[in-house]
Length: 303
Ligand SMILES: [Zn+2]
Image (tube, rainbow, N blue to C red):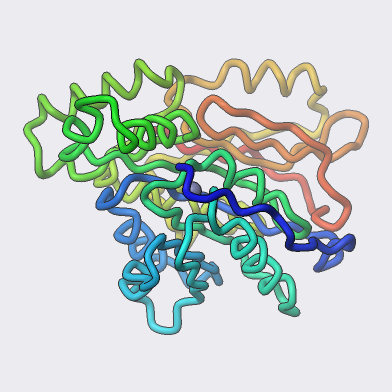
């Protein structure tokens, strides 16, 4: 959305905080009323993990921030502009505030404004101490047809959000006939082939999506007080002698039902690689020294 463009004047630090560790950031997009706050509340209710939530509301009063239910929830209000365009500096300042903390949160979830385009917001997230984890976009099965019925600023915003998504969460399916859900799913799938589309009601998959990204060792997250439905997760063992080519092949062969995979893989050279699959997007990068830990198996969440 193009509200007035906010020229960036915020000065980012040249140092990396927290000895170089980075906090994963999930961007949660979706048009007004798609259910972003509901998902965030579900996520917060399911975990004690310290998650900082930035809530962006274009208006001067942050309604959604008041709807965050967890007592003492760690929320940062971003009001009076949109972080993708008219409130870029405010967005960067919020990360700046977090950077002042002695201990970082495990994860940051940004509830984007209803009109926000997640792409420009995403580039701002790559600021010292933080790393973009995934962009999750909610599509309201009940409102979708009306929103995109004709060419409009709103329709453009909705499609821009969909195109920016690593994962789509279809919400409000309980309000529409199954036929409508199917049609909306098909239209979205046609626009963004390969991007997983998951039902908001199905085992709180969206909340789980946020959970797997957290910074602490992922095997802890796979067990115990899990954010996501255990039945949808599995572990692919990675032998310590795996070569880079074998790893690539293994990832190539993951079924399309895989919504997300993450692991720290040691290849035969001894190098630790951070493997991160979100929908159709895949990244394999050397694990930063500060985040170095033991290799893990590959944890996979499927639709
Ligand atoms: Zn914007």
